[in-house]
Image 1: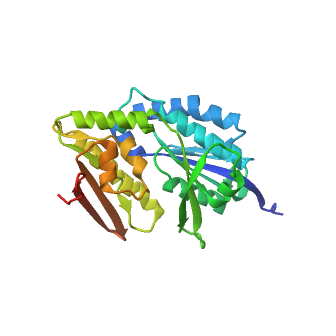
Image 2: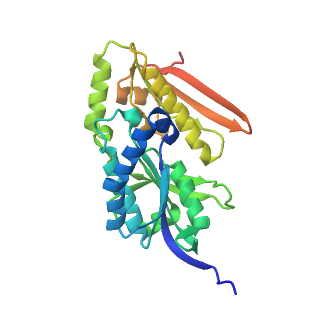
Image 3: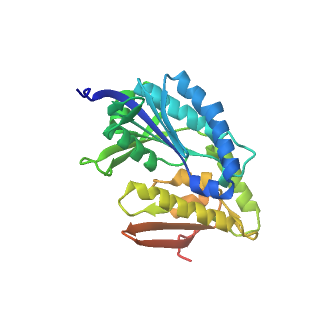
Length: 292
């Protein structure tokens, strides 16, 4: 007689490495070594400290469950804060970063593994998170309440693949690293102003496909453009970590230009339908907002 299906309500943390394929292409052995070290030194101790259980490790991510949703969110925030300053000696476009999604939901238990909508939603939330950020479901936000000293930004409802109802998404506001503080932003601005080189910031390209999974693709386009532009010696290019703080925010180009101290801003969108991809980009003068 087959044993009945076991279910339980649990908090699920889904983590994924940003730009994993790009990092592996550049330095496969080095990326694997760094990722293993970061997991052992930064991720695993924090999971253990908050009573989490690592369900599975993939090459570019991890699935972790917690008995407490507060512990899951606190663990996610601590991991991202630690990761933000973990590799100061590594160039910003080569650093290991995570996207993390946290959900509270019913799961199916199969031995040591878990399945079901609760896990699927956590994975979709992770795909929506900013690099170095944490995205949580509306259910998680309600349970956390004011128990943690973390503010959340309401990103509205998002359609999730294979789910009938949209999911309410909140982004955790984290004080991540010196690169995201006003002091570092001011230093970046001063550097850009003082240099005689033309200066440019590439804003994260908008995903217009209606499919959260295409966030990987649109972010990858942005990262590739930043990397290629940074190879031009006569151009001052704002680093990826600085521009990705604007992801998902409705800001004027003049505001971006002012905050980052650049003359030009590149913005665009990615739309994918079937096997066809349409990429649109605009180069804008940050002083007057005019298209170049």
